[in-house]
View (cartoon, rainbow, N blue to C red):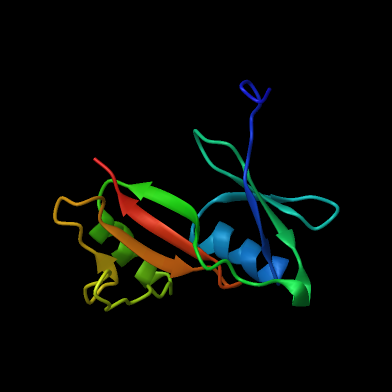
Length: 129
């Protein structure tokens, strides 16, 4: 039934203006806004992502809503940190990050670092080969 459809994902935010600036200026994405106040994140080589306003009813996602594959995670984390992005720090039995906020996989999956958009939604950069 949906085999040939071009599905896309979406998630909510509380402040479209803040989020639009973050995605376009901080992350460098091509972002458009429609007449109803919804954003479209134009992701090269992938489907677009819809970001919609929920105002005071927005609850940040407690899971990763968007992953950005990168070839060098240290370079990506350093560049984002220079743009004011703060990475999440974890120190549990299951998940540990280093001083940069990178979870080093040691061959057990990708190196990954999580950060939040201004609405509190969780994003990540993950190292791919």
